[in-house]
Length: 321
Ligand SMILES: Nc1ncnc2c1ncn2[C@@H]1O[C@H](COP(=O)(O)OP(=O)(O)OP(=O)(O)O)[C@@H](O)[C@H]1O
Ligand SMILES: [Mg+2]
Image 1 (cartoon, rainbow, N blue to C red):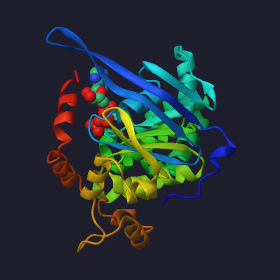
Image 2 (cartoon, rainbow, N blue to C red; image 1 turned 45 degrees about the vertical axis):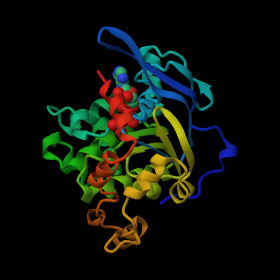
Image 3 (cartoon, helix red, strand yellow; image 1 turned 180 degrees about the horizontal axis):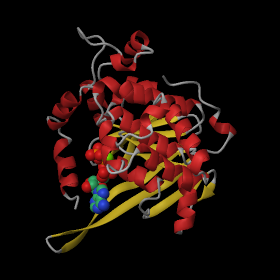
């Protein structure tokens, strides 16, 4: 699904990180230590382009997203929004920043408040970011639901999260992010907790938003979906970027051991019974429910467990408080 990108030389990126670094203090056995979760990461997110951030568990992907979303302060480096360095944010400035940069989380059930209806959740976002309430607010909520293909919108507006499927919940979470009118979406494993049958539908929705000009960071373990969806792939390992390039080159000629491992553990179109992602898309277009998983996550996990990379990642994640 990668498309012809706008000429990167022609403009500034929507969001640029340079030398982004995050050191977490942790205390172990009463001694102060540090985890260098993100080290010297450069990342450009362009309007209308998708960058996939892949890497083993604990490699720092979510930390990059949280830093870019300004949910946590960085230790070193700079973040520029439309070429302007983002300094320390007061709560008002943080709200302004959120109008430009929004995050979508892995677990839509956790990110939506279970006691509130879709009307309440989206109504708050519409009031906060668009200043719309009452009839105008309701019209904006219905428009958002329609935009994320929850149709007819009237059928969804008074639902509670538990009355929706995982895919529908993630669409509501995306609608809430869209209420801010963001130029950048940071999607942290947005489809990995969804039933495999509905993953492509959500990915295609994100692709539509990309086509509308939104810059997207797509965090995933699934190299096949990264290849299918992203223009560029950035591979992280132990907090550092170890490989980057356009999706085709990175997946066809991976140089780093972890990228090679990811690709080996993805389905091989040449194997009996395996189907290439692109081919699947062509045969299932218009029917998002028909798509099987792009990568078998259990296989992926098994491959990782058997990997020499395992011991290092385990010791890193162990340190999480
Ligand atoms: N608040 C924190 N305090 C201390 N260490 C942290 C904190 N958050 C993350 N870390 C550590 O930073 C490293 C990177 O974590 P991060 O969650 O960014 O990895 P990830 O690539 O998103 O992993 P996964 O694929 O499992 O989601 C890990 O070693 C983690 O334990
Ligand atoms: Mg993560």
